[in-house]
Length: 318
Image 1 (cartoon, rainbow, N blue to C red):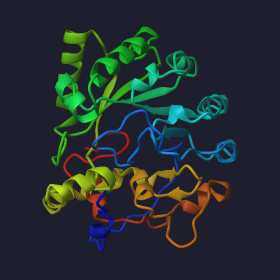
Image 2: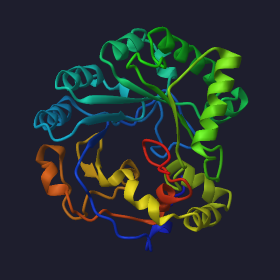
Image 3: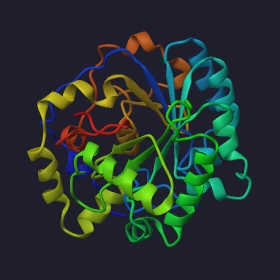
Image 4: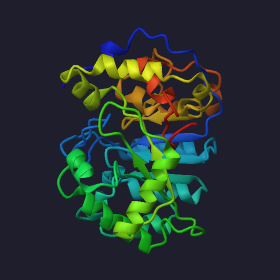
């Protein structure tokens, strides 16, 4: 795989600093039951990296100090970590809002038959990747049969109340462009998703989040192979909006890798850019107060978060 990191520095991305910490985003490991073209984590079934029980305990110890209101669980497929359910159960017991970044197909993996019920019982927000509402596009990006499996998973979640207004069970879908382009306007695309998925397949969800593909890891390597890396980076930079800097996720989020080390965001984690540089800081050492006002480490990839309508783990910024 071609390494895009050397192409991301130096950078003229604006200087930004941290604000109050709201979200702890924890990567429970890079193991996944899928291998997706756009995946910036380079996750897959053969990845051995999985967060240990000791590191999970350190995450829980930090949550007990009451410094964050949201726990955002990601991977790979976070549900494949053996400690996933214990972490969710204990975090919810502390009153922390939990988000599960779910690929939907995991609900049909052996041993996960009761996963949907577990998520509903613990009032977990499901953030589910579905990169298109057309079968041929999803299967082309993620593998044959993934679209139909994803629909079955959404129907199972709908049956538990997910996607229903007033149920308190949020099911939000995530869209990624198929190639080197910016996402279309989130609001209009959400309308298309809701109409097609309900009319054709009888499934429903709450919100659509549009995410820009980052020119790193697997997607960055593909761009280099096609000779499109410079063109795509130019697109991101030409679409930069200064106003999006106020809402980028790194200002109120810290990313934790499977070993417990800290990063400004998930993308910096994949580029091995530890928080603040220098000695790596571990979750066991973290004090939320000491993060406020720290300078965020940036590179050319950061333009992916400020281009056009903006992009964050919560979708468009504008």
